[in-house]
Each structure stands twice: as structure tokens, then as C-alpha cells.
Length: 358
Image (cartoon, rainbow, N blue to C red; front, side, top):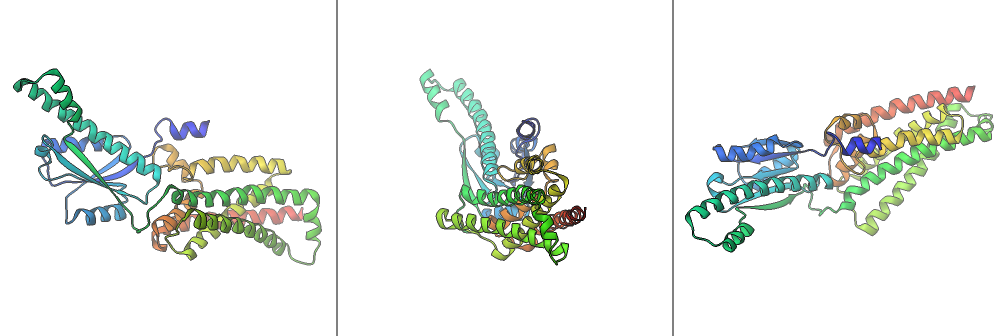
């Protein structure tokens, strides 16, 4: 309840960045732009029109991380009292929830502004035109001076579906649950049943034994992910836009990271039940606050989400699978998740070796 209340209540909501492209600086245009600037949850920037709309929208979406780019026509302040089109380009490769919220919010603001303009025009008509009540109601019903045209833009030619956004999150969740809960409980059970003691009596080093146990769990996780991807690609036509090798690298880092957390938990607990409970205590907040199901973009919970290493694994997977990001574009999540993986893995191996020597 604390997690859901914190995420969906208070000041934690999905925010998005948008650009408003215009050449006008008159009072009405500025009043319209200020609505977006003052709206909580919208990070609005004003940009001067340069060249073709599609090319400028592409640059703003790719280079400025804008979810939406709105183009206001020339002489907007005059046309808005008659009839005009407002074109909105949106990032079709962004998270589906962010897309829906961005387009819904922008359309809602435009509709409210348009309705206010319509009411002003209707009041003027009532003063100077001899219209019946029925005629006025009809005019109110059809009056919509601003028409919104929405165009989706994606850096790839692929038409994205919701399953495309979901699969990277499912991969992360598989790595997390099997790597943390599976490894922790299986290692504790081996210690309780005496299997670990018998293995340690073998004429091999403790590091080789630890390495073998870790490798076996990584192979299990890898097999699950291969099956998941085969089902996604063959049955649901999910396309991996980016490099398979880069995707595999992020998955391997994720497996090492979550296995390391499982190692640490197994060394801190005495029974499989304790290991399972501690794993759940870690997994549930990480599952809901790492962007598997919905993005964390603002509020104090956004900063909490940056603590969880799975957040960076998710960002890397989605960037590669959906946007076709290359290594340079996922450099930040790559090195942060790698640093997490190395640190937690070293701690886990040290604790496990000490535990084996006790």
C-alpha cells in the first residue's frame, strides 16, 4: 500500500517533456503557451521554427528527449478565432503510458482553450446576430476553432505495439525473480541439507565451487530468457530493433547483478523461508519502482527509483529493443548497472566464501 500510494498519490506522477514550435510572440500566443508552461507535469520548451516540421520534430524528439512537439501555425492569434490546425508529433517509441498521458493532457488543454475561444465568439454573435436559442445551442455543439493533427514518429520503421514495451520489462522481471529469489533459496537449502559441506570436501578450490554454483543459476536464467524471447518473436511478432550482442551484454550484466544480490541474501539468512522473505522484501519495491510496468518520471519517488539497479537494466533493454540504441546511447545505464553488478557480486562472493569457511 505504501508503494502504490507513494507512486500514484501525492506529487509522484508521470511527467513529460514537450516542445512548442512557433514564430509568434503576440499576447494570445504567449497566453496559450503559458498554459503548458504552468501545467504541473509538463516540462515545456519554446522553440523557433526552423525548416520542415517533420525534420525539426525528429531532431527535438531524438536529441532533446521530447515526447511531443507541437507546431503552432503562423498568425495563430488571428486564425484561432476562425479555424486552424495544430500539428503534434509524438515519440511513438516512448513508453506507452507516457504517450497516452502526454497526448491526453495536450489535447485536453487545447480543447479547453478552444472552448473558451468558442464561447467568446458565441457571445459576440449573440450581441450582433438575431439567432434563436436552438441555433445557438447548435453552434455551441459544433464550434471547435482548433483542430489537432497527431503524427507518431519513431526512429525505426517498425510499428510498435504494447507487447513491444512489455517484453523488456518481462525480461528484467525474469532476471530479478530467478536471480534473487531462486539463487538465495537454493543456496540456503544446499547449506541446510549438507550438500554444500560435501561439495566443499571435493579437491577443488572454494572459488571454483562458488563459480560453478553461480554459473548453473545464470544458465537457468539465460534459458528462461531465451524461451521468453522465442515466444515473443515467434508468437507475438516482437522485433528486436537494436544489436542482439548488445542486448545479450545487458542481460548478462543483469544476471550477474541479480545473482550477486541472491548470494548476499543467502549469506545473511539461515533458512530458506528467511531467504524467501528477504528476497520478497527487495524484489517487490524493485519490481514496481524500476519502470517494468510504468515509468517513474517525477516526484520524490523518481529519485528513490534511481537507487534500484534494475532501473538501469530496464533503460538499457528498452533502448536497445525498442529504439535500436547503440552503445553510446546507453552508456550511462550500462556503466551504472555494471558498477552495481561488480560491487554486489564481489560482496556476495566474499560473504559466501567466509560462510563456507565457518
